[in-house]
Length: 116
Length: 111
Image: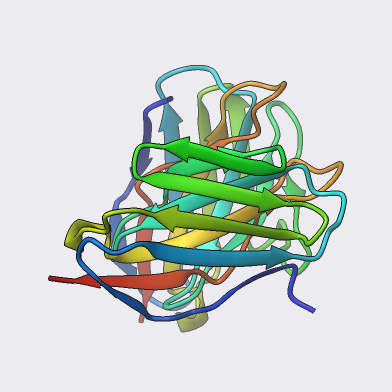
């Protein structure tokens, strides 16, 4: 499977600031996704990052709060804007390597964000 | 109604026993089903995927799927303390690329 890295691995930020999280894959992938995992909770999909076009956001998530870029088939960024303590979560990038029979998603190591 | 349901546990089993983890889902058209393991502080790692009714075995792990009952399970044979983790069930609903995750079952294997 593809090797996925995320930067930063963790950060502590002040309320009202923004943080950009990077996701890098060692091979071209068809789909990239961003998830949030709040403390003690399961994974919730924020959006699907589309190469060369605007991301597709899930209900409850908006572009102004979570702008996403995907300039090519190996890289994506998620920005958490105007942060509040409620944004403290683990943010995970996942990839789906190829279309067809397998829908498997593989996850990056995650970014642990604490907002004070 | 939650789309993917799991018992949160903890499920405690002795070392060497069989651990049975269960998951139900609401979208009858779902075609793809996954089990992920997540250690504390780590990201989810894929254990098994299953697409057809019946059993699929991989080492000590067996995934079971029953689409008529909208039920998928994971059996872990010869459970080891290193299997202690949260197990997440994920379902890909019909005509969508996203995965819906259950809340996870915490498994504890004691020596």
